[in-house]
Length: 108
Length: 108
DNA sequence: ATATTATGTAACTTTTAGGTTACAAACTTA
DNA sequence: TAAGTTTGTAACCTAAAAGTTACATAATAT
Image 1 (tube, rainbow over the protein chains, first blue to last red):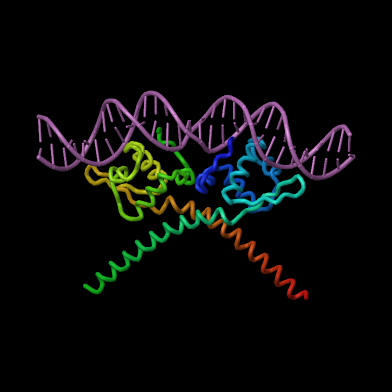
Image 2 (image 1 turned 90 degrees about the vertical axis):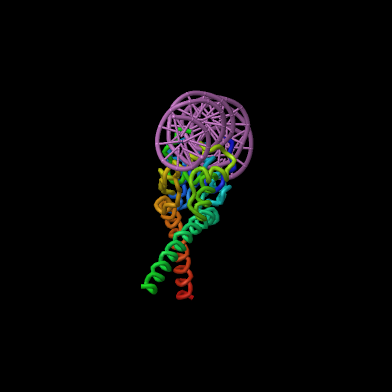
């Protein structure tokens, strides 16, 4: 794994990475304890951690030889922005429908 | 492209597919007019459309030989649910901090 | 009927994400 | 100092996503 530079959407596309993020809603864990919960090897998890950190989904606090991972708000923001954008689309569509119905009312 | 069955996160991981969704916030287009806006071949776009439809991000209305694509709310819901879940995490973290500060206040 | 337009799909190739093992580095403990 | 932990990384392999071209199908237009 040559740690590719992925955009935030590609980062959360991987189920294992989403599992890691899910896990970090419970507590902060070091990389070893995270990899223990997964089928794959520790280096594989290590790469995922690196990708998550680079994309801003987690931050890492080094305590001695242990690297503790915690959720980082930053990475999620672009996703939320994207979803909000489409929510606006649905809302404006709904408003247009309401306008249409109101016009009909005044006409009849 | 053997039209793989991707989960919603994998579906929006592809930049071209996100561009298509973005395009459909402006208007409803048939597949040919969508592919005209892209560098890649028409069959490639056609596959993306299929993937977007299968995952519930767009719906297709067939008018004669033309297939008109429009945004479908369904596909976005799982993404929003996922984002909301993490928003709850940040909110509860904030509440805990507030509680902590309030306790300090009453102690001092 | 023929030509044109819009689309789907099969077969194939290329690229790369995601996994592995092996080894190095850095910190901790006995 | 030596042994044990925790982590990073290099080198490699595999599976599959994403593209291509070529061809088939179906609706429309002339």
